[in-house]
Length: 508
Image 1 (cartoon, rainbow, N blue to C red):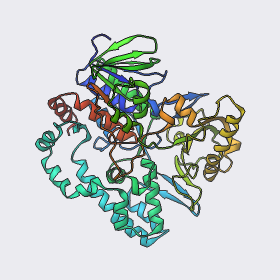
Image 2 (image 1 turned 45 degrees about the horizontal axis):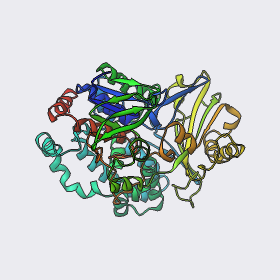
Image 3 (image 1 turned 180 degrees about the vertical axis):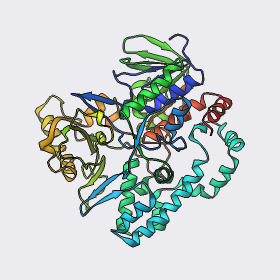
Image 4 (image 1 turned 90 degrees about the horizontal axis):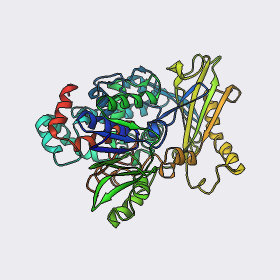
């Protein structure tokens, strides 16, 4: 492509959303991806007939045109769709003393809680109503309308004045944490731990550190939309965004490693590839993490010293251990797809290895595995520091991999007791795997910014023409948030009239 308007560095969900929307808005867009597969932390990969999700495994709203999910709104604008299978229960939480089914519909969810703690179920209902009230207010302002410049307020006042009035009484809730509401409504210790777990699954933090709108979105989509899994896995979402990019004239280049973002007199002017090729554009969007953008993509003196220091001091969520397994499915006819196992009630939910997430997506989409088999993805927090001195080719590294994967195997045995005897394919990933293959700082999934202790960085930067998207950018971690970061960035780069036209196109 010549005469580029925008270069996007990285093809994660945030980069693809920004790139595809800007192509839709008429910009000439090139997305450069270092790897052979698009999708970043949300890519899919194949081994021996098994199709694995590399990262996210929980989705919602893909099959509901009225969903609040920003990703669904983007796909509608691009006239793309991702077939999805709705499921209920959402999953099972396996605590040390019980297994708890998590239903999407509020009454059934609370009924399951009531079997354990009747008083706690009543307190949970009060908390849920607080979140649903916030969700109703947020629902009236589609994420597709948002941008990160001064033109946001006039746009909202002109198109959504009643929605703004509805939200005004909830400003304190919007800015507060889930922990604030939890303290006001719930005293039951079992329910408080349940809410902490729900928050951890969303943000990597417990209730005290999780912003209230994030959980409002979760409760609202469960009860008033649909929870579903994309046919074809996370790779199907990536493919839909790539189609949306390319049919509007945008281009995705795989195996195209950006060595540096070029800056001249305080303005981004393009990128230099590892091959030595220079590509020029007045707008560059980095989908790399905050730390990788500052440390590796920008020249050391490109940012003001204070901005650089602040960025590099941002705390990061731990990395993960991953198990990707192919297993024999005989006798597992009643298997469900989502499970969370908490090994110890005494340890913190955020302690490495204590909380293990399990996804078995072939329960919903049998084509993800060979006949009579299932595909399994299990993961848990794991500090990068414990691995950084190890050589990946060493016996010590291999031994540590197997040792640190045992908590995941113990979790899987809560769901499939004979899991070890069923394995036909085993892949173990470590923080070094994350850092290497996803090119992510210390293998992290984003900043550990607790509610009330700061905001995620804006899509805009101190360098003119340089923007950022992804899970180290406002609004934060998770597929919906990352898609929203792409929307914020793309809309900031186009006129309000173009944004309004996109909103009208999808009836928002």
